[in-house]
Amino acid sequence: MIVAAAEQSGRNRLAQLSPVADLKPWLATASTSPRILLSPRATQSLAGWAQSNAPRDLTLLVGPEGGFTREEEDAALAAGALALSMGPRAAHGNGGAGGDGGAGWRLGGDVGRAGART
Image (cartoon, rainbow, N blue to C red; front, side):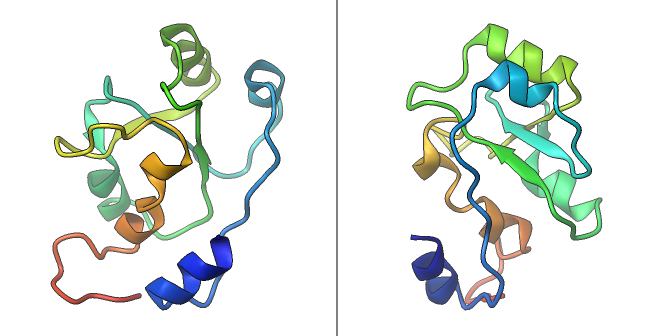
């Protein structure tokens, strides 16, 4: 799926998919890249954050189909994750993997640019 998504979007760099992990122990591990939590509670958008930050590696937290619980979100935020939203049109922005499939595309600056491919 990762290869097909990269081919379809014209990208030459593959995303890395990590194995499923228990959230609390994983949050306790060190990270050298920002951890992004897509949340309907967020006050800043992913697009806004991407515009004010240089391109870099990041970790996107993907929760279960129904999204993270409030307690899980609070634990992630306490561990330094950034809560960002996909915007008002993303009804399932923090749901399963399908809810964030366009995140790399959005981070690449393609939102709002007709016919853009990166």
